[in-house]
Image (cartoon, rainbow, N blue to C red; front, top):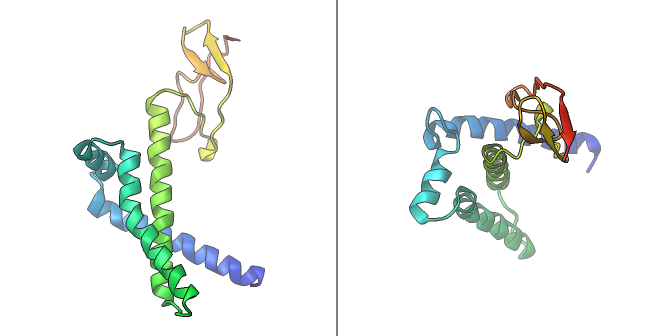
Length: 157
C-alpha cells in the first residue's frame, strides 16, 4: 500500500471516529459526564468502570476476530462492516484512555497535560503552599488548557 492510500485510510478513520464518539454521546452519556454508562455499569456489576468498559468492548473484539477468521477461510468481508467494527474497537480504547486519565486526575497523581501529553515527574513538596505534587507545583493546574500557575517555591522530596 502506498503512503498516499494509507493516509487516506487514516484520515477517513479519524473522521469516522470523531463523528461516532460525538453522536453516541447523546445516547450513552449524561449532560455532565461523558463516561457515565461505564461508571454506572461498574457500580451495578461491582467492578471498576474500566472493567465494565472492557466488557462492553468484548463484543466488538469478537466481531473483529470473526472478520479475521472469515479472511482465513477465504471469505472477504464487506468494507462497511470492517470500518464499523474496527472503528468501534478504537472508540472503546479512546474511552478507556479517558477513564484512566480521569482516574489519575481524581487520585491527584498530578499529571500535566499540555495538549494531553502526560508527563509524570519526581515528587516535590511546595514550601509556599504546602502542597505535595509531582514535577511542578500544580495547585492551580488547568487540565482543560494545560496551563499551570505555580508558586515556584518547592524542593525535591
